[in-house]
Length: 108
Image (cartoon, rainbow, N blue to C red; front, side, top):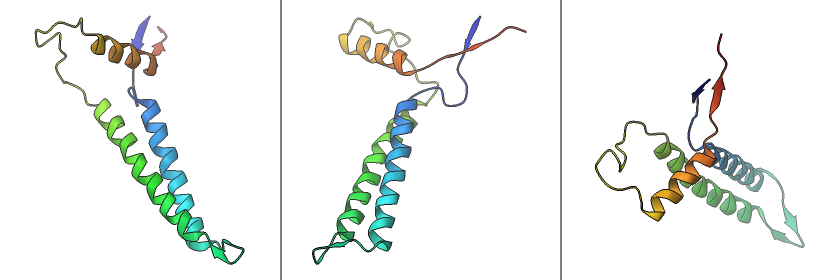
């Protein structure tokens, strides 16, 4: 049974985070612009526009992580001749393995 990663193999959580933040940010900005949100004589439309823009800015972090996590062909520390005994390397490797969900391919 071979393990096969296709489609969006790496950093799926970062992709979901980025898309959700974009959707919430755009929805918040649209509500702030087009909805009449006046309570007790105060207008809260600006608050929604600014918070929506902030959510879209946060989503950029998710997009950067997703994009950089899907770069193929970079040399690993082991290939460069370094040791992989570093605690940070082990933590990053274990976290990456937990996030990445491999698909199994059935034999014909």
